[in-house]
Amino acid sequence: MSRSRLALFRPLAAAVAFAGALLCAPAFADSAVVAADGTLYEVFPANYGDLIPLPGGAPETTMPALALRISPSGQPSRLELIDGTADYEREGSVSVEFEETTGTLFVAFTKSRGIAADMHVAVRRHGVWYAQDIVSNLGQYYLSINPKVVVTRQRYVTFGEDGAIVTKTRSIFSLVWWEESGPSQARYAPIFVEDGEFRTDSVQAWNLNALAGAEGPTDSSGYPTSAYSHPGVQADPASNGGVLVTFANLFTRTQQVLRIGFPDDLVKISPPGSTKVPPEDWARAHFPIGRSGGGGRIPLSMTTSSEIGATISQAGVTTFHWVDDGALRFVRSDDPEGASPRRLALRPDFSAEKAAALVKALAEKN
Image (cartoon, rainbow, N blue to C red; front, side, top):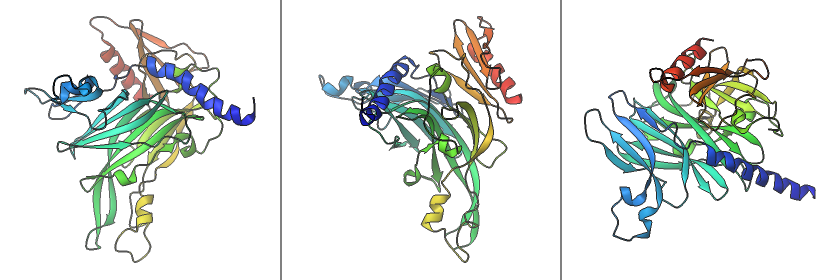
C-alpha cells in the first residue's frame, strides 16, 4: 500500500473501530443537573413530534431530537426542544452543567454523521437557546465521544465604557472530550459568558496534547479503548476560575493532568495608555494557559463499556471509577503497572451513588 493511501486508511480504520466504542458507550450518563433553587434539568432522547405540534402523518414526527425536562421544585414539569438537535443525525454522549450566577444551562452532546461524530453545544439563558458547533480536527474521518463540562467564575480586570479600570466577573464553561481523527487525543474548548452575553465569537477548540507541550504521532496499541478515551475536568479551587483536566496522552503514553487558566488582567496585556482592550489582546484573554499539574499511568486494567468518572486530587493524581457486575470499581493513575481495580460491592443499602461519593471524597484528599 502506498504511503498516501496508508495515510488515508489509518484515520478511516480508526473511525470504524472507534465507532464500536461510540455505539456501546452509555449515551446519556451525565445528562441531569440540579440548580440551587431545586429545579431539576434533565436531557433525554425524544421524537420531534413529542415536543412540537405537527399535523397528523407528518414525516418529521419521528425525527430524533434531544428534549429538556425542566422540573421546578414542587411544580409541574415542562418539556423543551434543545436547539440544534431536530434533524436525522442522532445525538449521544451528553453532559450538562448549570451556572447559577447567570442562570445559564449548558448542554454538550455529540452528533453522528455516518461513521463520524462531532461535538455540539446548546446554551439556554432566560428561556432562549443558542447553538454552537465545535470544530473538529482537520480530516475527513473523526469521532468525538465522552464530553464532560464544568463551569467556573473568574474575576478579571478590564476597561469600563469610560476607559476607567474596572473589575468584572465572567462564567467559563470548560468542555473536554475525546476525539479520534487521525491523531487520537483529548480536546478542550472554553466557552465564555461575559457582560450577560454568550460569546460565540471566542469559541475555539484546543488539542490537550499541544497545551501540555507534548504532541506528535499517537499510539493506542496495548490499551483498551476505555482506558484512554475518558478525559475529565473539574474546577480548580486553587485558581481564579481555572480548571484541572486529566487526559491520556497517547504520544507520551502517560496520563497527564493540566491546570488550565486564563489571563485575568486585560489592562496589563493592553498597550500602555490604552482606554480599551484592543481586539487582538481581547482574543488573547480567551486563550487557555496550561501548566503541568501531575501525571501517572494510563490504567491498563480499566476495561469496561460503562460510564467512567474521573476525580483529580490537588497533587495531580487521577482516580477513575465505574460500575460493573454489581460493584463500583476504581483505579488510580499512580497505581503500579497492571494493578487490579479496587472493588466495592453494591447492596440495596449501599448504592452506586453512595459508593461513588465515597470514592470521590477519598480521591480528592490523596
